[in-house]
Length: 303
Image (cartoon, rainbow, N blue to C red; front, side, top):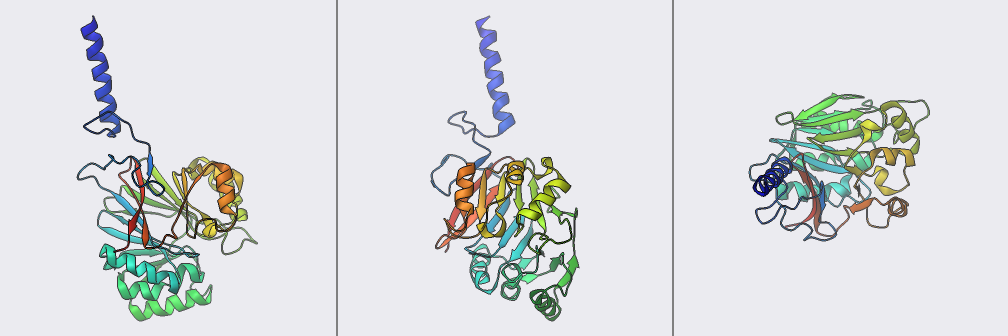
């Protein structure tokens, strides 16, 4: 009887290992869904992704008070926003370090300078195949400048909108777009919201959406669809969020494209118990990657 019990427990242990894929050869430790090494570089030091795993990578440079993110998966390189001229200089350093020579798609969340005016510098470093916009081509002077440059540089311009979905690589990584509309909302509140999904893992990029837009999106989309592991905090961390919206997302960490302690988000998120990661780190790039089961969040030195 004891032998059968022992075999039963051995079978359960092996089943757990196979199900989670989270154990090392030395022990049967189960890792958390998100391993954050930005505070302590040796957190879960023995963790590594399986050899040959298809990884989704997200990179952000020091883009203080601007937005730009590089997404890489399955041979595709996409971007969400490209900062302004100042931020794009650090974005260029990141692209050169990663050896990026082509951007397949560049999504602009809204046509404010700190999300779009880095287009020229970006294009001088890597060929941009397609610029994707969700506002009219004459909506701001920054958009008009971008349209003129796109025509000059031979960049294809296409439009996207609410509930559009795009797939990267083999189709396992998806970007789902929300851009709801309501009279009286500012351009920040109308900025496109991007839900990035790979397997069980999700990240929500909120561009500059403030409370009125958050309330509308929560009503239109519903709390269940907003759930995300990681939140790219809106509007560079300047203001608190709508409580009900943050509760719906329920992020483990929030990425703030600014420096630590900036704006009201610092006190707000600390009171809510949400971890914070800042892109403003000297000579460091923020790197997020996932195999669809776990996130790894870390800083990578500028070379």
